[in-house]
Length: 466
Image (cartoon, rainbow, N blue to C red):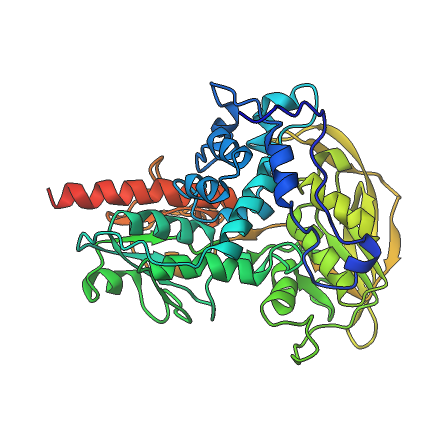
């Protein structure tokens, strides 16, 4: 057995210098070397009760894959992970491990937890760089399932069902698979190549990906059942409908939703001079919001040439929902944080173009329904920030198209699809999960919902054919 490493801190992960990376779209962190991974893996205490596994939405057997790293069996560690998680290279990069598996790590009680996410990334990258992908040749069972959306929930569900022998077709509205993983997360955090590689393995295993298909327009869910012979449908269409504040001036030229801004950069390649992508050449940018998407938008604006970028968030740092790592990276790169501030208006010139954003200062009161302290405006504290671009990153809701074209599908007041604990909707044979149900959430929670739905679909089809 490898000697335990009782260091109180994680092994540092190499990264680009902040001043350099703020001007390019290359991945910020470089990942562990084999020696670094083994050193960090040796910090794991191999607890018998495995508290970290309880914090993982897809139930990765964490101590087991980490032990294999200490034994130099990196491919074995990869195979252990993919028993329950078909997206390890993605999850290793973008999961909020600090609030999930690592939050329950025993080493974290007094010191820093084991760097579970970094180790997962290392193992997945080792496999990609050293093992040629090949099909698993799962035995087919003759049953067809349709999945709507090739984001994390859809891909996770497809992976689990393909292992069980189902004939899977994913219908994706965009021109490539990946969903939010490719349109919403920048290259410097999650390279598109990583997403393509994970999807390639699913396709080798027989999963079919149909792109440029808008369910509700190109084809309806009822037609999938009646004309194409699918026995179940999993809705994993995400939450791509942006939310705005409804303040004066929000329709001015130079106001974007974060989804639109990131899509133009990520999917339409605004960062690449070879593409003539329509996007504003900004000098001073304000991003409204405090989540990971807000950090992504702010850091993207810097890389696209902005000289000043502000994060405007109505609560304090302690209440920010973004990952601590993303906040830290944004600070290092020069993003200016204006916490306890909230926009009240956007000012435009005679041409309708943004010239400033009016903010009002806030203070925190008692906790609201979210458990966070409620922000209260300080009367008479308004002031202007001179900006030419405003990016709204205050949330997204599901697109109502599927609901409006599918009879009997129960939804919430804000458009989320109502499901039971097994992911089943109000319509027989239709299941749903991920952001289409919860609203914007994490990649790993969506993947977890995909796993739950896969198990439920399998049980449903077996019961119908018993």
